[in-house]
Image 1 (cartoon, rainbow, N blue to C red):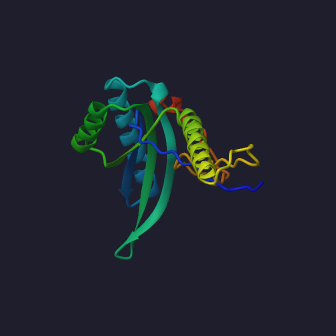
Image 2 (image 1 turned 135 degrees about the vertical axis):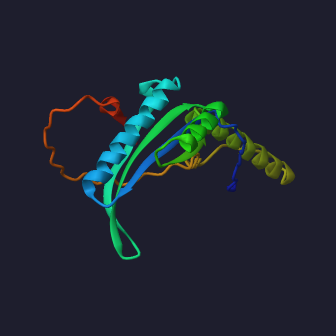
Length: 195
């Protein structure tokens, strides 16, 4: 009695039914205070526009906020950036609306849309089943050609690469917050993006 190693394969294409839209509001000013204030004002205006477009606050998440010193022609300037993510069912009209909103607004913003499927784990299970059936069929064909029958399975290995997601390291720094009395901002209610 001998053994043979058979690799079963399964592959399918799925139409994406989910999307993540990332919008980054960017302000570049000569001073820290002006850059931060412009970024805050512009991101608040964007958030109000998004909410008036029919999006729910629960669909919108903060995904980054940064302030950094940059240089252009040896001249320093401050860049403040605030990014938000919108997760929703795929909707091309929403993508077009948001793209138009950014294009016609007074603020500077980048927009990027990523697409995915909603049930990767379920798809993975289906593909495992199909790959197993494929390997069994191949093994039975080879065994029959040699006048043998499959006596059993000695070992099964299952691959786990079914999506393009990857893990990132996040470093959390310390921040100092100065308490000031100010008006409530719409972005005060945003939660951070999931990882």
